[in-house]
Structures are given as C-alpha cells and as structure tokens.
Length: 194
Image (cartoon, rainbow, N blue to C red; front, side, top):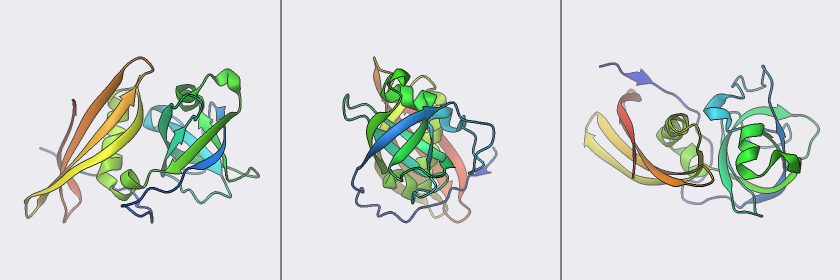
C-alpha cells in the first residue's frame, strides 16, 4: 500500500460562518495555456474561474457561484487573474458558465462567495476534487461536513457529503478520507453514492 501526501493551502476564513454573497457579473472563456496561478483551466474538470487582480481571492481558492435567475450553482477553483476589471467580475471557464446558463447570454448576473468550509478543511477540498473528477458530467453544487473521528493516535477519518447535478439528475456522494495527522499522509480514501 502506498501513501501519498496532498498539501493544500488554507485560507483565513471562519469555519463556523459563511461569508455574505457578493453580487456581480460573470463572463466566460475557453482559457489559455498559461495562467497566473500555474493551475490549468482544465483543473477540477474545467470548473475554474479567473478573478480580478483587485480581488481578495487567492489562487487555488474555491468559490460557490449562483445564478439567481434559475438557482443553479457551481463550485469553481481560482486558476487565473484578470487585470483592470471590477473585483465583482468573474471570468468562468465555458463549461462552468454553461452549468449556470447558456453561453449565448454572454454576461450573467451572479452571486458568489468563498467556500470557507471546504477551504478550511484541506481534506474536504481534496475529496471535492476527487468527486468532481469521478463525475465529469456533473457539477458539484454544494457540500457539507459530516464528521471527524479519531480512529487511532495516528489515524483520523473525515467524512463529507457532496451534492451534484447534471441538469436532469441530482446525486449525493459521500467522500471519506483516513489520514495520519502527524505526517498529513493519506492512508485511504473513497467516495460512495448515497
């Protein structure tokens, strides 16, 4: 059995409260080969976004974006920045935009917020990426922390639920990871449809 180390930055958000939604606009792009963050536009199954260089959002951070007209939501990862645009403007990858509305709309009024729960918990972010990769035709629209259990002195189990949709069908997928808190190495992980 192999152990792998996956390190993710944590962000200074309160785990106990979600930040207020920010009203803004979203456009779309097919992305490019090089990003300011060094993450490709294809990262997280193209559920990616560029934010304003004036924004407080950081490379690798996840945002929940909502189309208030139809209630559709998507969770995207910041992979690039755009200079000289308002901090309330997002440039979503074409696939992420399409999960919210038809690309023919061009410019979409959206609401968005950082996803502090999953950002605060690096294993939640890890399981989010595994789930999105395992369900490429679905979009993760929300998530919830279920539990953290100490199995032994050197093993902790964390469980998260992820809510996915493809427009016609909705799924709940439970992600579980067991890791060594002293080395931050994964012992095992898995996902299961509920």
